[in-house]
Amino acid sequence: MSGGGTGGHIFPALSIANEIKRRYPEAHILFVGAEGRMEMERVPAAGYEIKGLPVSGFDRKRIWRNFKVLYRLRKSMSIAKGILRDFKPDIAIGVGGYASGPMLKIAQKKGIPTLLQEQNSYAGVTNKLLAKKANCICVAYEGMERFFPAEKIVLTGNPVRRNLLECTSSPQEAREALQLDPGKKTILVVGGSLGARTINNSIIAGLNSIANSPDVQVLWQSGKIYNERCAAALSQSGAKNVKQMPFISSMDLAYRAADLVISRAGASSISELQLLGKPSILVPSPNVAEDHQTKNALALVNKNAARMITDAEAEAKLVDEMLSVVAEQNLLDTLAINVKRMALNNAAEHIVDEIEKILTD
Image 1 (cartoon, helix red, strand yellow):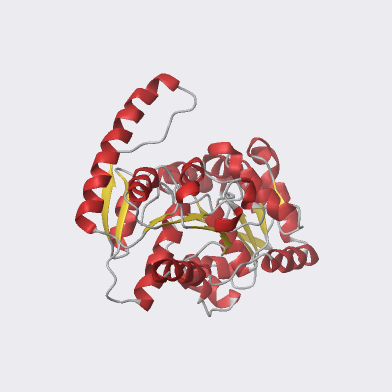
Image 2 (cartoon, helix red, strand yellow; image 1 turned 135 degrees about the vertical axis):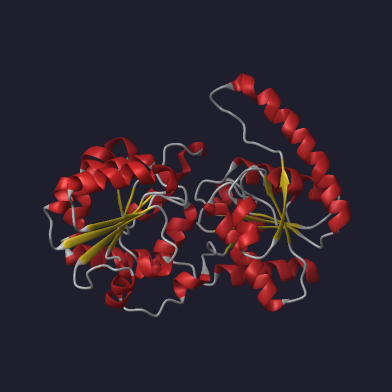
């Protein structure tokens, strides 16, 4: 199982691995990621072995830096050969991100079956390069024939963390568990697993407006690297209806508590919103390849299943927009119904079904 770099790649990979283990408890699963990236911590914490490659992404802005990238890629290809020789996998699964490139490329050269999982509505460079020789490509959006061979595409959806779907708490119980007021309209603000500078700056800029909205409360995950600044700004504002923390460990309760979610538009986040039927305002990150988060967000906006504010507009508009949307129950209900209609359920199960087909053909 190879890929990573962000939670958007890691969480689906872990969900697939967990479903394989559920069906085949004796299965041997090895993860391969990029050295120094999030997967090197998250995967062992989930109980799986991982090996790291020195691979790094291409620098599109500073081309001269790519000599080092090419050296790392060549070294990673050599290490990948050794990993495949020692581990002898029946199949190699790529979940996207540059970390999956060397492993899947060598696997294909050696005739090992490969399955790709593409989370986004706009395919990543690595998966596009690997698609021609892949046995199967599992996708989360329709219309992916513009990137991949049509006969290899299977629409499965994106796997999400199982515990999010299994939460049985009522919104009021979830708010109490999170030490929030159980009776107030609740806005959940998240910026991805590492936090998001623009979203944090937008909340800081609007703390006075939030403080003057006593019927609303905000649960704000700022990310660790922004924690001190956000905590200081909140303290200075005196807003009593905002609970800020660097990381929310009980995301199942946080989603359950929320009437409205403010989020980036990463593929995993959108899949979670769809499966849970959560109204949202999406602020796509501009710092991603091919601006794919905007394309992800528009897939919802065009079906009246979410609202979107650009990164450039967020600091001026986000807080006013979220306070306006959360006050309109009919709008919240409409967004919830429409986003739920877009959900593709049991994605991990469907992907493992495809793995089984490849291995039994």
